[in-house]
Length: 210
Image (cartoon, rainbow, N blue to C red; front, side, top):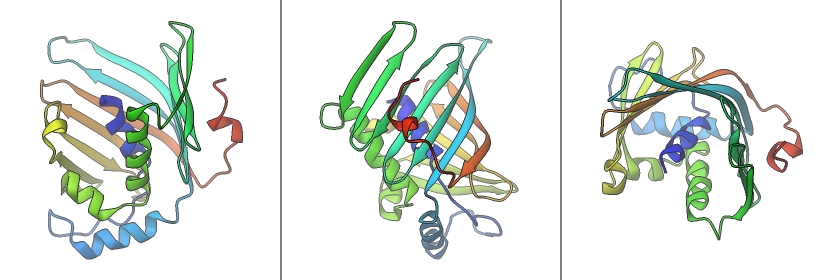
């Protein structure tokens, strides 16, 4: 469940949060973002993930890549220090874990967790205002760079997620940094490098493990 929230934010193709004097986005701005989000067809990027543990000084670092293509194709893959991940395409997908040499097929019907991922990614990538506001309170905490703070409304999410912050790139088109702060003091920081928007992605991206 914890990696799900990160995935939801990866695919956010948002723009134009800057130059807002209020720390709470207004409705007109949200509608504008929803319209602009519809222009995004695909996103791909490498990422670096840091896991900061409250009880230890050591930071756990992993690197990987992700890709998303409308309407609902997704690949999230760790490359270092281990290989693991999953892909999703047209309602079916695969999970893999190099450590256990295990590869598993699944469908959205057979995997409630993956079904949740798919439905929520659709809400984020189309910037479904009603969906977002029903699940998060959204605050604009900075404009240079644009940074949002999202706090969960639901009791289940509040059990492990205190809040998350989303920092955008200089042109406000993609996310450059994501932080998930947990209730126990741990937090995960994910940074994204050189995202590519609306490239034609190879079909095997969402069908083949290798």
